[in-house]
Length: 281
Image (tube, rainbow, N blue to C red; front, side):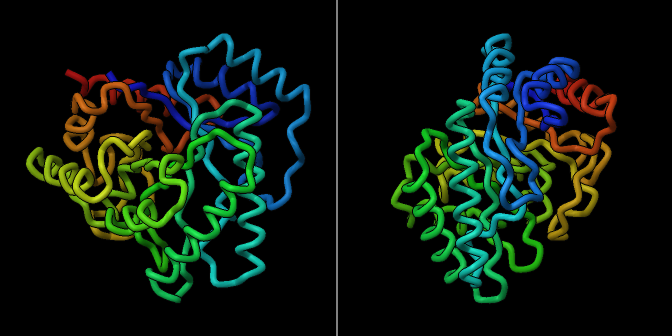
């Protein structure tokens, strides 16, 4: 079975994310290591590292990823913004190394009107600089996107191009988001269509490079290019698309985390995880 979990808050302490994922019955976890809307957050304090390490020892089988800041745009044509993005991502990689978080999920960013080819070239150059500068063993997972505006990474070919151009291919994998996949035009609701989507991914990128999933239904229809997450089975994807993925033996040991809306009591996470588990044969 896949390792099902959720993105959980680190409010009042990074270590508290483990309590929250335990409450909802998760087996995998995604967090922000720092406020995702700040350029220069404080370095990790020794007490934070100790608390996180102690909590993690209690959940030694938990599969963990961090999600990089939404501010980071390594593909930007504005040199100042790109430099700030590189510095911020270096800091993220180094925090994950300190916390022993193996994966960092990263959006490919936006070419801001300069075209896909140039955007990918800038992204790869900045990504390679960050990986080279950071003292980190964490793997970068490029997340597919919905294709809004001038964002990169909404098709498999663009992600494949990133991996082909980077000098650190062994440290760059993929995180596949179901809402983004659907919104960008990949319809996987029927079994034959699901098989074709995965065959296309394997041809372009290689399934061996797929390490992590975000499980989100979509508020908008296939090909809308609008990124709006919905509870599992309550959006335009519906239950069958998730059933195909959850029962695919190729992904039986993969972490799959929710990024669906929730309140402080986390009941929505509990509900969505129950729904997902009900689909596993």
